[in-house]
Image (cartoon, rainbow, N blue to C red; front, side):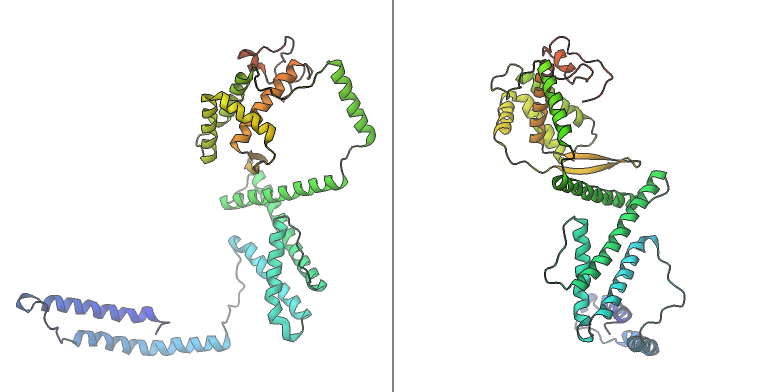
Length: 377
């Protein structure tokens, strides 16, 4: 009855409708609610016709059910077409089937079923570890099984990487690509870039720095000669009472506000940053004391987020930095550039970033104005 409950509910609903109709007509006038009515023929007729029709259908359905239970489903002769939505899941199914085949060949008869699920779960876990760039190692796992898992998850990883690069080539060519494929491809390339960057940093720590002793001495000597020729004096820490403090802070805040002004819709982080910028405009002395306190005492920093902007021909990294740290770094940037420019640290062909400083009242040393159209900072 439960398996075919939809068929069974139809006569029940019909009988309820008939009962409501009959009682609506019978319970009127002086009868009121009344003791009920014994007019059972319409409902009996519904059930009679239902049982007469459902009996041969139940024989067919139950016969098919028993045959399917004992003999299994008969698949159609022609092969199924794999749609583009199911290409990757189909590859995963084939990979799992080949893993199962190897397990059955390798294991003794008694432990096949118990261990196959464990090995398949280890296979999925190894691939997740690879995507997160975490070394995968299970202590105590037999070497043949570990080698088999490594072989299969590397095959899956190679296919995953190849599909990412293949779809990126299609996107660069301007072919017709689904929006979901583009978004998924951006996520995959971000993962691959992070893996490559971590590997580069690890190799640098292990094998670097890739500078010979002679090159290092040459770089150091050139820098010392340059500083001596400019009569360079070290830039001190920003003093507590610095006469250009407020103007440098305003310049830094203006640069940050310009970047936010280009955005049409502001998310919560951008709104928070804009609020901190406005607060720094209103209370510059409080903002400056907080900035210098951060520069002096802060030793732990918030994480920097990274995401890539898809230009379809290439990807551009976008770094998300904590707003307070961004304001601190922007002020330090303005301070160092102003002091370095005043000391003639940079040659004239480097484009200065403090042309706005002189226009805002900061006196840059004459001769340090940079020609426009040169290399950016």
